[in-house]
Length: 209
Length: 209
DNA sequence: AACGGTATTGTACTTAAGGACAGGAAAGGT
DNA sequence: ACCTTTCCTGTCCTTAAGTACAATACCGTT
Image 1 (cartoon, protein in one colour):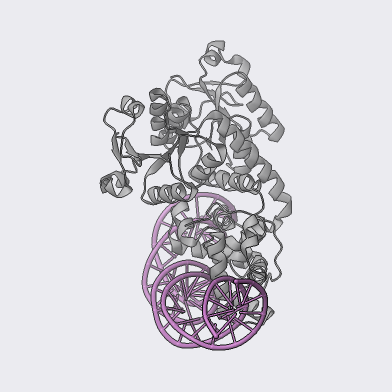
Image 2: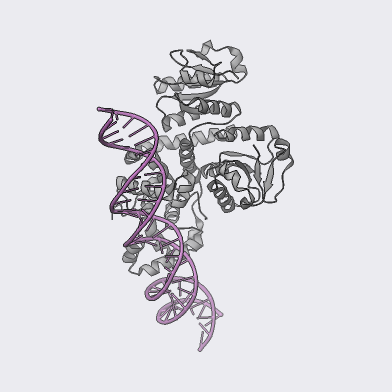
């Protein structure tokens, strides 16, 4: 399928042509034939030189016209990527990406997929999972802990080490460990990091391992 | 490329066979030929009948073995999808998805893309953008971290161990430790428990020790 | 008196975490 | 061409965390 580029200068970069010899480039979205929108073709939007308002405006316009949009940036940044994807882009890459990569992106988005660098995927999943899990209710299973266990758990929740907890509660480190082991078992937690998060109402992605 | 399915019953569903006549199905990951992992082939993981712990465990195992994983659910849900993608899956769809859709998913993930239903994409972008805009002003000290360090820190924030982070980010445990040491230094933290708390906006009693 | 639960503690052990020292590769800036 | 930064990884080491097995003392209940 023919690739369409939207770039301010109206110029086709060498790598774009190498990746798609039959590609066409336009300066304005209005110059693109209506037929292309009907076919939900892919439009590669070069946002080089545009400020935030301009690129969001341009992007929304292209998305609203029915195209699938891949945003191309000269200075890829994750906030910018998230903005673009949130505004409806289905891909995000560097303006000077290698021709093979451009062809992969084209293939992916032509078939309904999303394309972005793996490290951006990681970031995206990380931050979004945090929001999702925060909606979870408080842990009623804390009721299963004895008073002493709760004291130990509260110290862990503050980030204290076993040695510090022992000093604070005036017991041995061995006793602290004993309490912690029981706490982990009761709450189905693997270690103190997860306990600290749970105690602070931040449920984890990995509660069992 | 040959498609590989991982399903508890070891049975290939009709739609899967229709989409990929040459597909093979296994009950256990250990049954898959080693060659498939080396080629980073796609594995379709049917999570029907598995509880949270089981499916995360199974998914991590498959991802850690080098496969690209598409998770198939009988009851697609957004939290489940986010969990799956965060654990390294590159696709998420219904176990009874249409054969044409299965082929599209296969094509997308074979070329380095992500595949999930459009409405999930929207939700994902929504919640993650909300987090991005909210976290920025509260943690200016995180600006000192490089992109990769931030990724490691986020995994710790979720309660992940070094081994899990290594698997998720596809680096060695040694590299994870190296990043963590630098993070602790930059943020003046003693250990991962404190890092997890800081990342989740929870104040600690002992930030230096 | 006997029993169960809780709290505490010991020895011993394995695994995970974290630090020290060292080095290579890639990318960007001068 | 050179330097710096970032990312990655190795070997080696110590310390912290956590588990296993075992035991005693206290308190409340039966």
